Image (cartoon, rainbow, N blue to C red):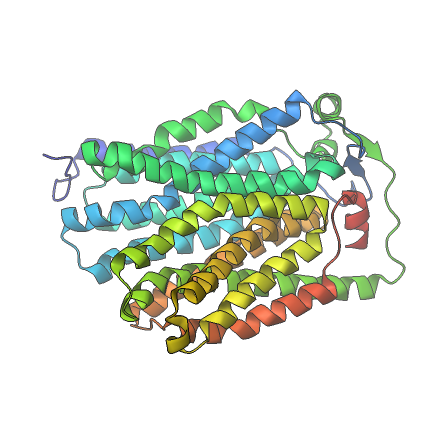
Length: 475
């Protein structure tokens, strides 16, 4: 039947299978949760960290490999949205406005998932949260077998929840187990490589499987890849502080041996705790504004750019080439960002990427007659693409380094969720017919982006090479 399931009735076996998933996922979640919720107050002041001169070992390499693979697998699922929409629309006979509900539901799920899994990571631990995200990820691969569009929307929301939840927890875990001198570049490079790798893997899978097996195969591949990640879970450690608070001394000793982590004397808190708290709230506001601004640039301005270029009279080839150039420049940009973040300054690198994006926004405000000159237009687009790619590569690592352990997951989840929220708002605007021009979008974003650079300059702290216990004490 050409891999089409639309219009086929759901028989008893399908309902039974979905019921088993509905029972199995909560049971797996219940079984994965620890018996006792850790009491962070009991471990207050405890600091576990590898000395600065600790070399990277095979255990570090295994964690980096598994978590990078996890991010690639995790990113693949939402990245396939663009590839499945044409086939889904044709099979179900949907209007464009109806099929647009799918990315809207998925982005809403990633936003919710970022908040939810960040909260779980602070309550039950980092490793458990990653496993729960993977379990949900595996279960939602059934959306490839749904005969009705409405069921696809339900499963796509849950898929978004699982995909949005893993990213902030991975950053949080890596920040807590890596030696200080390696932490910065590892966070940026692993996170960025996972994101770019996921999009490349999704496009490769679409090229290989969709012509033969249809768009549903892109959903179904989440089942074997998710099981692969679960099979490699033995190499994902738990944060040492959580092991200590649960009394898991043997596991803590084994982790200390593999990763060189030792218990260190707590850092003295700042003399003026009230001023430090106010300073930290200002930093949180700055990072949230930055994440929101980036999301509108990425999901709005760059998304609408090809259509806007065609309206300006440029050919479809040039317009569509913008997306291709964006993908090509992403990985080199992340590598450059990782170098400056770890070798120069984390705070200044973040501000620099904001300023690059801001320069692109300012260029987009130039008169249409001026932007008609191709070299100038290419320069403006390059600033937007390079700035936005570099910004998201360093934003979440910077957030993970700046918060104390008991709120690190939630704080990083808040920033991650804010970076998705713009996509939800853009989709809502598209439903209402509000699709601004490149200049109009740039005019709306230039003020919040400028404000974010100012606030980061005021409230941001330098994290490069600094001990987490020192950063936690200041927080």
